[in-house]
Length: 456
Image (cartoon, rainbow, N blue to C red; front, side, top):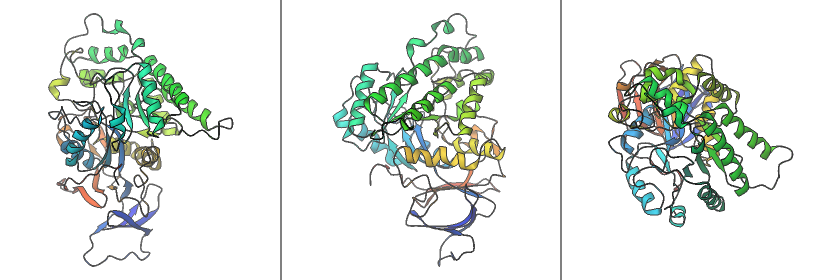
């Protein structure tokens, strides 16, 4: 395939040839990349060619939750949103805490349309010996507080897990909340009934910002002691991000130990913490319940500012689908989590279109940075020799986000009615996995051919 006349994230206009699953050439337009006989040529003039997103945080729910999402449905949603690599978390049923559970999930992942990694989890029953024998993407999400799947662990087990991972040079992704700082009083009294604004806002008041900040600081301290590479998942507060930045600067500054082996700590934020706040509780009700919860509008703005200014390393979705029935419950019964893998790139590209973010910044946080942080060198770049994981978008053609037009099995989105810039073409290792006609809206998908990125 020859993609002709596309603008890259840095503003260069290039012809890009894809051959045998990789980017074979990136040359200035009209510099001599003529079509080979029978080669498909994509006229990309006026559009941008970006690296496929590496979503380092999804929950595709198999095994055990296929009524919410499957590897097939979740990866179709990913492909339609320009995500070409996903990293699945361990809180499935059974949880991915030993070799047998990993193998069972790996069999299901054969249905994936996009490339993937599989994380291993930590519980009191985990078996690190068999788990680390498998091709793990990372250890984690290690839960410092219970969320979906009841996998919260004590501090001593967390420290043990860090030591095990550090010994094997495996990164650790951490869900950082301190349950001792949750505000039980926020859940007292009449919350207003099933699925109401009072319910959603009470959940935000209950799982306090202070609980996140304290747990982030604890995780960073433990990581420094164990020499483990730690990535803080779904950081929802400016203070949490600032703690990661301070720890990173202390490890990489002039006074840092030059012989230290661990990579500096990193953090991610989610689109729902970037684009939604407690001010949206009236619209969302219990559909806005997630862990960590929505924060104040002031904190949301602070998180977005830190993304714009370069303090945030990664934007990942924490794609956590539940059915409408599971969300439309009272606060005590409603499931925590929201879908988002298909709207990651579209929402951020809309911010580019509006002048709130640069395209290079978006490219870095969704593709280049996660690929670099987690050591997936072939991903996250439009460059010769890289995997041809490519996404073609038209920044002049946004459309409204509608649940009925998305592809997750859960059937809803917290971003209903917002604008997004969606892909016209998505390639995984040179194969077309998604294509949409920009005029008619007609869509087509490729065949399931995803690979575990840790298996050569």
